[in-house]
Image (cartoon, rainbow, N blue to C red):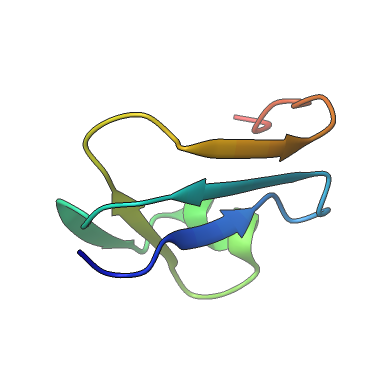
Length: 64
């Protein structure tokens, strides 16, 4: 097993840690992903199972 993956929301209010290997990696180039990331694509990992650790405040939604 590899080291835990960590990340969080863009504003930094919520942080997470996930252990285990990702099942899939997706690079999406739709307009919504371009808007959300400010880049030409969005990159996402998909994991099986629950998030191991969440820290931070209230999730205000993804804006979708």
